[in-house]
Structures are given as C-alpha cells and as structure tokens.
Image 1 (cartoon, rainbow, N blue to C red):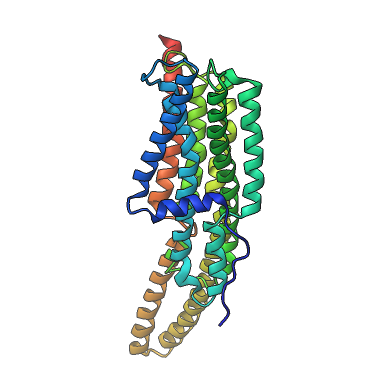
Image 2 (tube, rainbow, N blue to C red; image 1 turned 30 degrees about the vertical axis):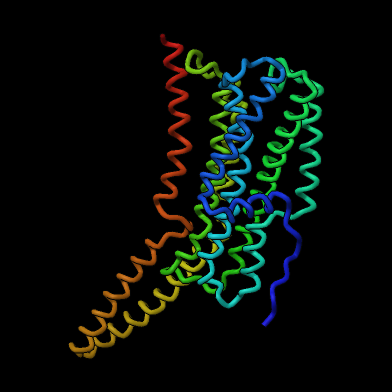
Length: 344
C-alpha cells in the first residue's frame, strides 16, 4: 500500500489557521477576538495621529477592521469546507485513496512559495498606499508609529485577500478534476457527487457579497439612487458569481447526464424485449404469459419515468434556490431603491 506524500509545504496562513483550530474555543469566537485586536490597532493608529480623541471609537475604522479580517475568515472557512466536501466524496472513490488524499490536500492546504510571493506583493501595495497616498488609508495618517502600524495591518489584509482569491481558484479547478476521479456513476445514488455544490455555492456568494459592497460604496446610503456606473462597476462580480457556482460542476453534470442516457438505453432495450415477448404470448393466446409480461412492462415504464426525473446537476433544489435568491433579491432591492429615489 502506497503512502501519500505531501507535494508541497504549507504556508504561513495555514500555520495561523491551524493554531486557531487547535484552540479550545469555537473559531467564530477566535475571529471575534481577532476583530477586537484589529479594531484596537486601527484606533491606536488614529489616536497616535490625533485624528480620533482617546478613547473614542470611529465607525469607519471599525468597518476597516472588519474588512481586514474577513479575507482570512473566508479563506479559513473555504479550506475547511473543501476538506469536508472531499470527505463526502469519499464513498464514491473508496478504491482511489491516494487520489482522494491528493485532492483533499490541495483543497485544504495553500502552497508556501506562491503564498510568499503574493504576500510580498501585498506588502509592496500596503507600503505604496501608506507612504504614497496616506490620506487614502484615513485622513490624517502621518506619524511614523501609526504609518508602521497601518502598513502591517494592510499587508496582512491584502495578503489574505490575494491568497483567498488564489486558493479559491485552486479549489474550483480541483472540483472540476474531481469528477474524473469518480469511477462508475450511480444515477440513483448521486449524493457523493453533490459533495462540492455547497463549496461552489459559497464561493459564488463571496462574489455576490463583493458586488453588493461595491454598490453600497458607489452610493451615499439610500439618499441617492444607484446610477448605471455603479452597476457597471459591480458587473464583473455579478458575472463571476454564476461562473464560480456553475462552471466547476459542469464535468460532474456531464457524467450524470451520460449515466442517465445509458440507463435509458438499457431500459429501452429491456422494454423492447418485453414487448416482443408480450406479442408472442398474445399470438399464442397464453394468458398467463400475457399477464406476466404486462406486469413486467408496467414496471419497466415506471423505472423509465424515474430515470427521466433523475437530476443531472449535482445539487439539491434548496442549493439552487439559495443561490438564485442571493443573486436576485439584493439586486431587486437596489433597483427598487433607485426607482423610488427618482420618483420622490
């Protein structure tokens, strides 16, 4: 029996999330503490620059603190969800443990050197933002201590965001290849093939979150309508959402569709044989055989109906409903708000 060998070493971000997982408290509570740390750190920078009176809190810095930790929280969640998705796939590929282990490792582990390269870019971007246009961070950023603190906080946030996008792409590509790992597809036991629908759903919802944040940032609350430029700005995120949700599952969809065609062909062949046997029994007036083959045909027709109703997209109806709701409801609310602001 071959032993799985890790193809690459994990990154510094994985070391952080592993420490979080090892703590004897829930992860959500850990991130509450991380948020409190970032919130205090941003306010320390503001207090040093005297743009915020001590110990007063400022809303925009609290939002900035939240934005700073969201990429890490989402990355942590998606990698954990990727691992659970592979575990749900396990029953369908029990005869391929090494391939399954490789798939799980790719889903749950970020590679050291690509993450280091992305982090270097993130540090450069943070330095250029803090020292090139300090007012872009917050108005009044000037003191060396606050500048250094802001550089650290932005570097961490940018690094996590870049790695989130990078690892998200790796996970979605792995979902596409997972369909090829599955051997025989059982049309009536597709649940293992549904394993990744939750992952692609939540990855798609991430882009929808960015789209709505972009629309919110393009307006002044609900006092002004959403103009065309705001929707143009959000359009890439709105496009990426369905692409992220659907594209990785196309391979599994094709496998299920092919399995349905094969099942229908097999059923059709049996129906043909049963019909010919029924005709022979009718010609010979063998009523016992006529009744037997008639019952057999009825059963085959019922099976054919069940095969035709078998879904070929690997998700539950509730999953698709959740995604469509997330797509259309926020957009509808924004459009209604925009229309209302123009009429009033």
